[in-house]
Structure formats: C-alpha cells, structure tokens
Length: 63
Image (cartoon, rainbow, N blue to C red):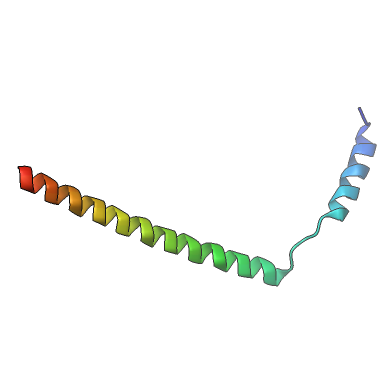
C-alpha cells in the first residue's frame, strides 16, 4: 500500500495522461445528446399514442 504522498503523485501523473475534449467537442456532443433525447421522447410518445389508441379500439369493440 502506497503512502498518501505517493498516491497523490501517481494520481496527478495519471490525470496528466488523460486526453481532455476541446470546448467544441463538448458543445457538439451536448447538442447531439439533446437532439437524440428529443427524438427518443417523440418516438416513445408516438408509440404510446399508438398503443393507447389500439387498446381503446379493442376495448370499445368488446365493451
């Protein structure tokens, strides 16, 4: 087990090896995530409406 000073030094060395994204990459990926989330929400809303309409049609046919 390393002492705390060695641990901090090793941690700083590993953080230095990290490839950090640029501001442009962060903005683009954020926009992409927001767009994909909106598309997924629209898709599931349409599926929900379709299932609800189908069930209402079936229940009104038998009831």
